[in-house]
Image (cartoon, rainbow, N blue to C red; front, side, top):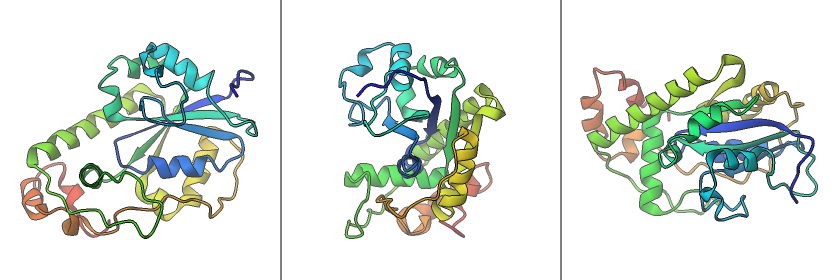
Length: 245
């Protein structure tokens, strides 16, 4: 079914990879009138029926996301959203600017310790396991991260977050921390409902996604000590605090 009127209020989830956006989206979609349709710029995302949609212009893609979006017959959608990860903007360099021009768009920026994000990204690429739905799934592999890859990834995250904060007004931007989402999902979602202007609901226990990695950074990054020493006196030293996950 294609829903055309009335036009729901638009939102987008922006983040670096491996920051918990799938989990956030699963919780958002428990709301009876809120719908987030997955990764708009991911050609393999099954939420979008048209496999050739990425051949469209940036404006046409946003019109599909917010005006002609797919929705189940039983949903009366009042808030419609999608997700975009930072690397997905690389192939469409003008898409971010087009996004900022979409009327009344609200932005949920999901943040996480960027070293954890990079480690998780490396683990998923190595294992081929991007999501975990069963406690029987294999433990993610330990990985080695190069200094150059860390520096590039840390800078990309800084630049991406700064670009978002400079492009959207505070009233249209909500920052959600991965750790808060993980440990206090109800409180975190309460802030999201308020930000979107959607009635608050009580979360169920139906969420099926599970955290893939529960070990600390120094147990999962093979050259953690080398990296910690290299970044010890700089702005990224905070990513190597192993006091928490």
